[in-house]
Image (cartoon, rainbow, N blue to C red; front, side, top):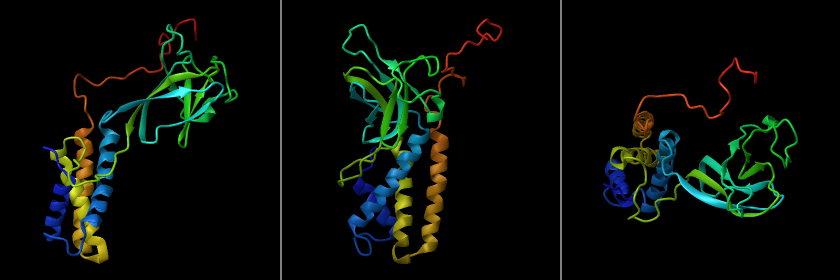
Length: 237
């Protein structure tokens, strides 16, 4: 079953032993609930493989290296680019992330893919921008495709449903976290606040342990994403 903002707030008030607004207004509790809601979601998204992944497109501009990333991006999972999208025979290629600009041993403003970079296009991320190597030489509509985990919007209305994995199992973390924050308002009860905070932290750890293997089929294996030759006795070494 889904859990709404109204239901979460009612449970928080139950923990606070306050059936109707007295010490805490609905707006105050909603703010605390949303803070903990985002913390629970981000903790789940960190380990729950590709949870809530979405896609979006962007266009290439001729001779422009850097582009603005989607504004709701939380975790970037994959990038593909098609440098000649107007050509029906051209296809998207996976762009390989550069974890450090130091990985580029030649100039960063590169227009050709050479052996000093890698076979596929590359990208780097700085702040809210993404840059591509090589730099596109022609424009292309929707020539960039992103796969990413988005940030969540606040629970805006009482009927808005909580959007986390296995909500019936983990919604209580939001309740316990918000209760801990509420009890610290004006130092209502710091001891009880600490107890709820400890339950929240322990619950987050357990949730991440339980969600870690979303795809539980088959045995674990090592995935070769580089594609280098593995015959170490070959002539290419």
